[in-house]
Length: 125
Image (cartoon, rainbow, N blue to C red; front, side, top):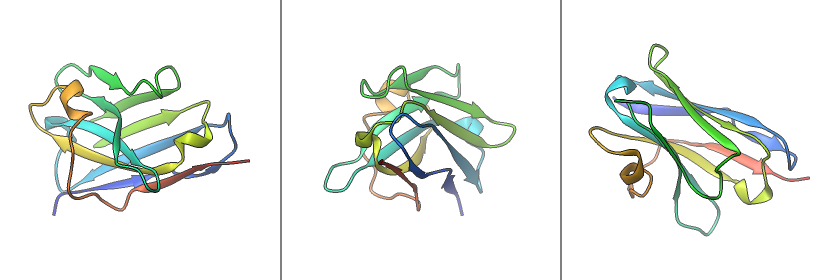
């Protein structure tokens, strides 16, 4: 069964860093545009960052530009999200999603009905 395994979340102080990992299980990420999404309590999910498989182009939400970096290692079947200068408003559960033949801009505004287990990121002093 194709699924993602998200990891790397935790509790961090404002200004700190975390590196999230999104490992594909049962399918090859190399054929897909991958997106990181997050959902804070009481809010709708939002696209954080997306990366294409064709040219590794990337897209970032305005709220994370300059602080987050998305990357992929198709040999390891994993996509990463390096998060620096974390703020309390980054607190959310972070999820991955995949779509074939999709631009990064379109991917990051997509809505999904089902998510994996996600990984909790809490930014608090």
